Image 1 (cartoon, one colour):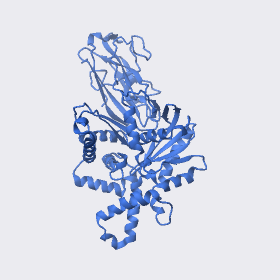
Image 2: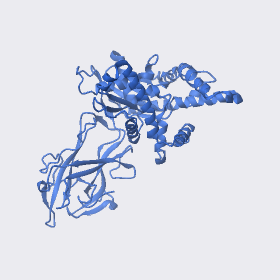
Image 3: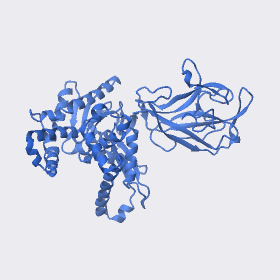
Image 4: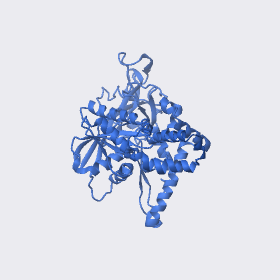
Length: 507
């Protein structure tokens, strides 16, 4: 899908979708390109999801028609399909979720005779890394660190990977990926305006079809990728190349701060084919001993597509060869994820405004406290789960055989210890339990009143496996945190969706 980026740039549409929430920097918010995207969307009377779905529907119909002509419709209907959609690394959760909505609306995941169509979203630089580093084979050494610079039509995304092993090749993200809206379309806009300015009044004689022919046929696939510095056209590239250099420099600095050194910068994406971009970055980093690598021909432009196909095959559980020639074993979290809980109140740690009396447990507690399962910048092993134990307190008539815990996310570099305005609700984890009220552990509070305690665990699996909640154990045998007398863990009281558990709900 990256090969289509020059003709269709969903980044602007998704960015416009988030604009009302202040997700844009001032320079991007005031961009003429974004204003044009906003105007087109308003004229269409469609949402961002609808527009992307329209595009994907046509692309999907064309792909299926082409494959059916080759294999026949009967064969295609019997094939299990795994679709891998690549997205910019800088996209936040709301944009990835919107892309999933668009894929569904496009009919790509409609029921088929062969079964459910599987969908995977992959960061574009990750897909590019799979294709380009596997292709280099023996030239890659253990301990090497490569910055994958995916310079596309809309965004420029960067992720740095460390080679942890070579046979098979196992990669791990070295630092958090970064990126920005400084792709090739901003160069295109400067070039177009320059041409119109030089033509003056004669530019009005050009038809829209003529302008498209110049921009696509002569500029996009001719002059731009082969351009070398000249006095006239050089300033068209000056619009974004300094921004790309800042992004690359930022990745290198982050890698260096981790005690590692960058071996090379690998250029991929449409703008990644530019000879001038290669020369520009080589001039900047050659003295530092950092190589700039650029494959010939269309390989940089199609690297993400190739990597997406590789990722799809590598994720299939029923592969017959059992051999994984290359894999990304760990990533770096772009955000922090956790849930709220009520801790024993400590005047040295908690705010007075969070203090409340837990009438059932007869203790002073602090509400709105955050327990982070994963923090931004943390290395995430895709195999190892993260698990914490929780308790809930119930009175008779208040237990209905379900639990409900809200999951929160935060993009702060250092997540807060309590829920603030920067902590956003991501979703709700609901579990139906087969444990009856009588099976819960008994507890007597200081007033001599009997209450029931439900003990359970919530586990986060970074690989995306569908086992987020373990069945609760009324005896507390699977609880790994320290248990206070009476079997209740006073520091890990979960906050509830309803008012039946504990004192009250945090809305």
